[in-house]
Image (cartoon, one colour):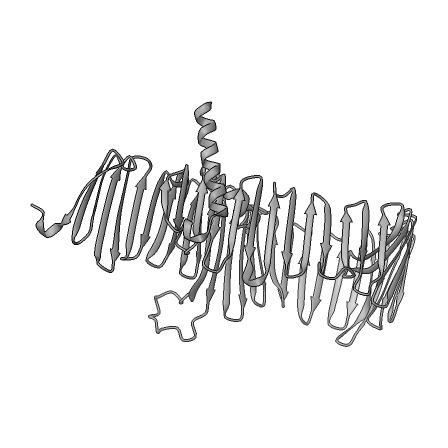
Length: 494
């Protein structure tokens, strides 16, 4: 117990010293496996790690940094864009700043100050779903206690919301549209330029928008009707639920039987057969779709093609946007693939039996959950095992939790690479032809480095119990950690 306490004290002393020490004092690299190490990774970021994933301090040449005492707290800084943030037992609490703006969240309490240098700047405090307070950009203050009453600005897509003893009365405003609700959602009325909505649910309701449409319902859902007056499509329709429905437009006609289960539509741009919905769906025209749900299905719209098999287990998607082609495939919950390519401007000639060129790889992400993941972005590739987070990479997860389950990781950028197993128990670093370093802590380590004066080689057993270091001119031996001899010119060695 005393030895463990002594070790922890020494480790955290090193941490405190490293955070407060000047950069010149931290220039030297060292490696004691999962206990404590300070290395420059393949990205040029200097990382101090203590007790495997529990503590990390990382700083790059531009001053961007990460300090983490996992899983309690982590802090990141990007001075070049004046951005910083801090996680506290994420997702319990988070604080971040961008230039003069500050945002803080603790559980469901959110506070935003838009300019900390201006005492009269807008701010927003929300303790969901109970308390709301703030000041908007016009300097108007507001406050509300749910469900008692008050006013809230900029919420739920509305400019202002006022309520008294919700759901007894509420008023919402957005642009020129004002909505009044009594015993929400039963009685409501909205008015504005070209907009009118009224309902006494479920007895009667009406909705008008400019001269584009006029919709009504009586004893919802049993009767509903609509008129459309769009420039390219006019007509009317009705539904007598659950018996029959009819829609007659200038460019499309639809018949509904036992709606919404059976529907047949014919039009100049689109045809559809739902027999019955959602189990069989067939559409042709601008949208081409064939679903035999939940067994298999395919849907095509310009630029997008999707397929599924045994919904929702297997899903595939292909998206074309300009010169970018994206392929996604997931097999829940075990496999996920996300590949992005760029079209080649002038694909090379090919023989008739050769496949069509697939374009230049932009990014490639593959995951077999929860075992491994592989990510390729430009010249950088990363392999990780294990990867317990079921989605793609998430910044808070990477900062606070991913290092705990990352037992094996390899990162490669062109001819430089880092390989790490069990948080540094095994470590290999390759920097092209300039340097290689390999360590199996605490048994053995060896290093080769190309310097201005030639090649330098070094090896050590048990971190210096035995060792040797040599370059093109000298050779030196080490024993019992502090005994050193040699150093003579290699030309004079026997």
